[in-house]
Length: 393
Ligand SMILES: *Cc1c(COP(=O)(O)O)cnc(C)c1O
Image (cartoon, rainbow, N blue to C red; front, side):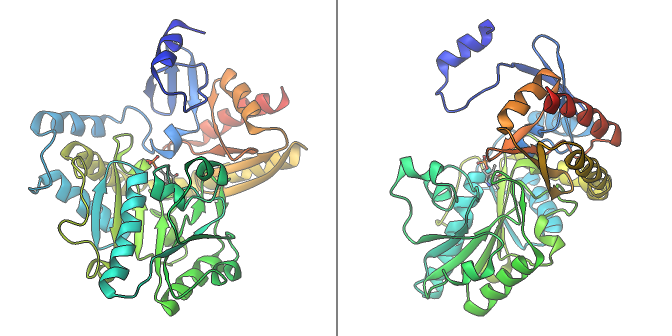
């Protein structure tokens, strides 16, 4: 193990099982480690670096912003915050945006927005229905709605009033609705949970249920949003507009930033001055990243590119499923896809790393492919060649 790893391991809380690789720089869709080894990146920092590494237009914007204004406080407006909010409003179809520093905080804000709405309306509603195998982050609130016992149990007791329904099973959701149900929270496409895409009937059913019962619909678009499914946000392919939405990961292309958003209907009764805040949220640097990232996405029509390359990737992965008995199934859409394998995914992933390919897992036996959205067909071909070596080894 190299010296750098020894030293940093001594100083970090041991919360991650890290691979013995020290990454040093990136270019396009490739990463390089401190030994100069080149890796094709099909993880994008866990669905973050949609525009890949070293986008010069974005980098120049960030450098200019560093020189102009790095930080101010939320007691004042700042120009990049307004631009970023306008950009996100445009692509998310939401009316009001609140900037956070991470996805987890976006979820916290979404939950608080829903609770405040119910409180102000005097409905007495406070319960949340979440999905099995969901992932919403690691704070107590976010982990309380995360559908994985392993993430929750050591930190109990969780928030009261949360129940879990089966994903893609509307009856299971309906069975959990009570007079106190405040909101239903779901990822239109579960990333961490194994690349599980919501069926159309399920999404439409949830929307209808929410409308009939006076429940708010919260979509967690943190991983599946920002172009990854071939729509700017995953819910848009169903036409099932949520009342509240959480975003993060790719919206700043690597600058730490998240946001939650709501429709005017919610905003009218929800958070008011004093209800919620954050020192860094809406920070000029983070917001310059969001405004520019969205601008590039729109100008370059990244979403159309994702549809095209995503279709190509799906075809190649389907062929892999036919070719190998140990590759059981393909899941997902666009550039958020997974293959279910027979052996623990971690073992294939370690061998892929050896072969110069970075991929990640989603639950135990799914290899998750969430590359930069700018990949070309040749990168898909290169990925397959390396992945096949890892599967065969
Ligand atoms: C990553 C993720 C989160 C948490 O975001 P952080 O920025 O890590 O706090 C929440 N929900 C989903 C769907 C995610 O993929």
